[in-house]
Length: 205
Length: 205
DNA sequence: TTGGAATATTAAACACTGTTCAATTATATT
DNA sequence: AATATAATTGAACAGTGTTTAATATTCCAA
Image (cartoon, rainbow over the protein chains, first blue to last red):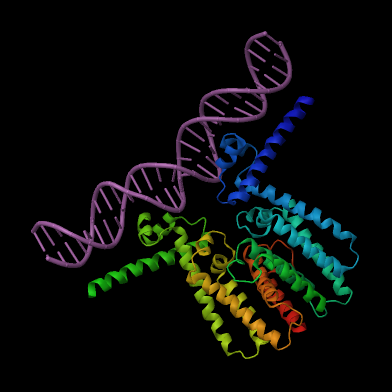
């Protein structure tokens, strides 16, 4: 059935074209300001066609969202090699920030943007399964730190959430441009500097 | 000049009506999904009138933004009474979180939303003057802590930014609904629990 | 090779959006 | 009461997401 195969391939190709166009437009103009017509223009098809490949605009976002978590998961993969949980925790933070700043559009999509969370609320999609998987990994590492005697007197859930919040807070303030107004000496490196402070804090715990 | 006075008063009244309607709609539906026609409907005027009171939709946002910082500044006012900088820092965090969760719409407007930062970039409006003022206050308190021997080995700017990021991260994850997907035992109180962890961390520094 | 079925794609339409502006209504002054 | 001024309107423009009937293309069997 070579023909059917080719058709599947062609359909897949257009799907990828739509996703690529949508992604680059989301980066350029943001989710809200990207229109279906914009996407259709870029791939040189009529707007209607998009609704034969995706239910609606949110589903396009949703698909990219999932891809984002997969990319992040891939990057976190190397952490398995790090034996010491404290070192792993620090490396996790570094990779997290690196990913966020290098793919700020994706990060925005994954952790900041408002649009389509309701999509994920009821259905347990792969998407936030990945997402909560990432958080579970963090918790796992924090747990190992606790077991080793670090972070004495801390609650696992609360501490894990706080750690996540710290790195998320830094990158999201940066991404949403709340750092350049704040009159800091080295605004450009503030996230890196902040992360160094974060590492120092971890060492003292 | 009683007539002119009344006219000014009436104009001011309609301005306030527009702002009140816009605010409540922003809370209900969010900034993007609130239309000028929605606002006009609520105050029972035609859409056009709004453009005689505000330059555009962004200016409405901008005005509310400023009000948000004023309200926050007011709340931070009581901190002047707290002598001990460490205690003041903790209280600051508590007030910040309290404000953010009680006025999540405003907080969203002030620190998360993307829309109209370009408005503030060139002009030095009262708005982010207030905003950076809040951060300057934080820095001032952190400085006093450093002077008292706390936070040894830390850089002022970096540590202040990290502290701000931690509280911002917690409330923004909550506001943008990234906490209810994460499968935590007590999701409802996670920000409070996280803040307790934060306080414990401060004590160990 | 051709006819018909299946599929892919389109263009037009619907109800919405922010914004502008000429026309209208209401108010104030002379 | 007539006129000047200010406030308000509603229609229009160009854009949005989405649906759908019509069209174009591709496929397979006769």
